[in-house]
Image (tube, rainbow, N blue to C red; front, side, top):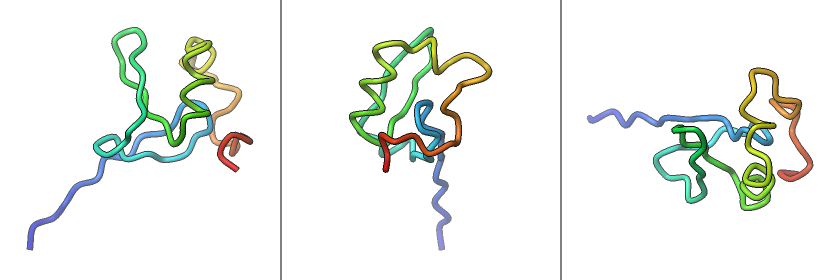
Amino acid sequence: MMEVKINMVKDPVCGMNVDEKTAALKSEYMGKTYYFCNQSCKVVFDKNPQRFTDDHSEHEGHGCCCCS
């Protein structure tokens, strides 16, 4: 049996885990690819990516309202 490896990454806006291989929504910023759970998170990120790429994102892991 072949093992399938899933690469989960965090949506930088809401902190939700997203499979980077199947994610339909993504953005490039400063040479890095960011993946999103839905269009709302991508739009928020694209308006101000620096807000979510600093070491201490205010949204990290708190279950932002965009994903409720």
